[in-house]
Length: 78
Picture 1 (cartoon, rainbow, N blue to C red):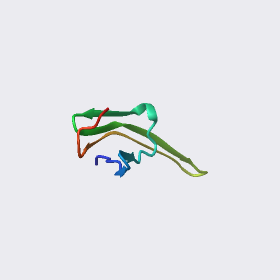
Picture 2: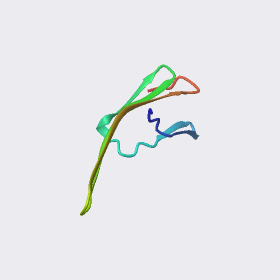
Picture 3: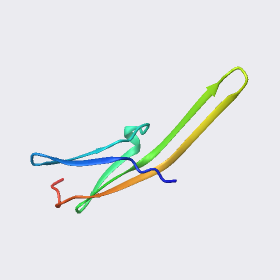
């Protein structure tokens, strides 16, 4: 199943604000691009969780890439 981060888009005066929830994603693993009037947010996520108890040891790993394409109401000035 592909992970699609939640995104909020709203106006603040003359500015268009885009907020993306990217828990567990490092800043250096995020790419933000502008393609005409589409904002593209993409990156990768990798995490590992380990639990050690007296009678068991569990290790879970997850990784993958994501991409969100957000059409903007007008061509922005980068």
